[in-house]
Image (cartoon, rainbow, N blue to C red; front, side, top):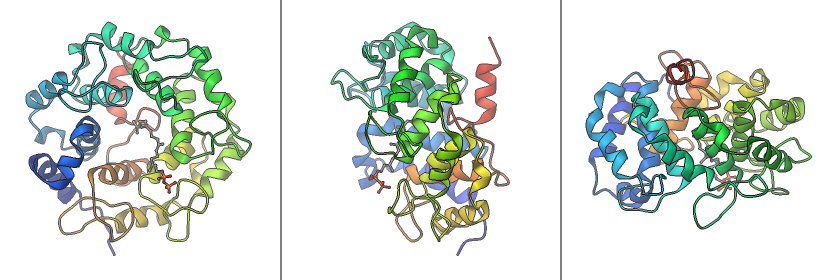
Length: 314
Ligand code: GRG
């Protein structure tokens, strides 16, 4: 049972994870190192410890992951994908280094991934998913060139993925899932199109994700998982229905998923910790206004001060 956030231990866990390059976790994560870097660094920033990493070193590593097409890969020498491109942009935003990007090149990579029906593919191989619609919209909005895509068509496609239960899936007709709901609601929020959401119906579906332990699941009959503290809570905040869940029980669930000795947060109490759940646990606590954690923006998944610095300056 944990009664507080062991922030210092989580900071040490993240800094150590980066050093253990030969560990099993590190080897299996090698191809998605860019995502891991975004999760780890955003967590450090939310805990006011971004200064503990060597900025020049990490920023120059990110730039080695950029492909000639303008997109970014999960690691040096790998193929580019829209998923890693957003992580790279978010990463540079954290360090206030967006100015080193060739915005024309990155945006042209993303623009070319939009399909005739408004949807987005993730890379040259063509898989379509509302995750990629969100990523394109979020990325281009951070880079202040969202007009490079057909926003109306992108929104139409997302609206076609809305289900009778008020939720959204990865493609039209696909089952509602909290992760896809975050993507669709986030994209609609960023583009000023939240009027397409039936807020009461979706709010009801989302608050029903809270189970007895206080944790949230991603769809009916599934186990709770710390990562849904982000996907569900951020969506509830964007549609003004966050007061429909029991916040203190969710805080307790997240705190119970901490490794109190070595730091890190797991999916459920007593499971093994990893960097993905450490990020989503801390980000969830940020949305719950936990003391000592900086506020995070529910649509952009970046600290509010970072987003303000970008969006409020020309
Ligand atoms: C910037 C935060 C941020 C995200 C970028 C990649 C992305 C955009 C969004 C992913 C949204 C998504 C689909 C999240 C769900 C991830 C997850 C835990 C999937 C597990 O699905 P199942 O079916 O698990 O294995 P359940 O919990 O349903 O049993």
